[in-house]
Image 1 (tube, rainbow, N blue to C red):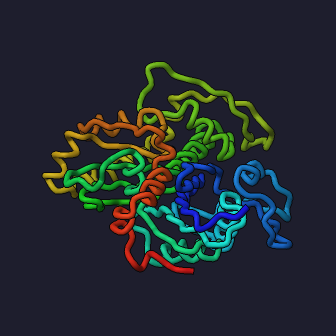
Image 2: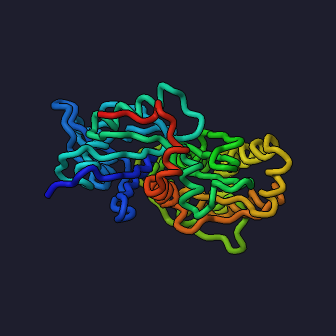
Length: 340
């Protein structure tokens, strides 16, 4: 069965890739991990199958996350990963699909070109690029074409993108390389420093999801984890509580907060007034850490709302942009559209 010129939106995330197909919605959500055989340079597994191999592969197989801090760090592997996901979604195709790919705000022209080139090599015919906060705002149901200010904080795995949007564009924006992955790394460092135990990134992520917080909880939570004792090198059981994670995440959460305040300070007074009335919208998986919305609201004095389906907002936004020809023409500059 052949697909003819499908329109596909891709949230090319550091931790997870979401694919939106026009007319179908989100059809794929998998980790952005690729397992490669170093001897043959062939792809062994992609997505969830490859994620399960992280830290568990023999010497000749390496599990790679080809995206780091929101941008391509391994071009060849990213191309193979995109090709795999496009084929999985489209099957065999006669006419190359049209892609809209999300990128962090503020990335360089070289980094943009890497995304476009990798998409072309993966089989795309026409490529549009859209900044993540714009896509996130559209996906969150915000009418970005109105002449009033809306503030969006999109926190993924590699980057936190913050933007004040009005009349279809970002008036003020910032992108920092502090997000979900940095939170995981902070937990790993804290556990090693405090308990002299090394835990994996996956265990740190589970701690963050289950008992993590950046704002004091009313009732402390606990979780049992396994790690390796630094002194003996042997496996050890450890009970970690939410106060530990609160302390571990203090520094990265403060960096996110500072970035939000910095964008507010650069925002024109009229738009600041709009934001005070409308509130700050948060999207992305990273924003689901307990208390992040409370922390930002307390320190800025502005209401903070976590969008419905926050993890999917960026991908949904790409799909809505693909469905709207007027919006598509406004969002995409000619140099961002390449024929194959």
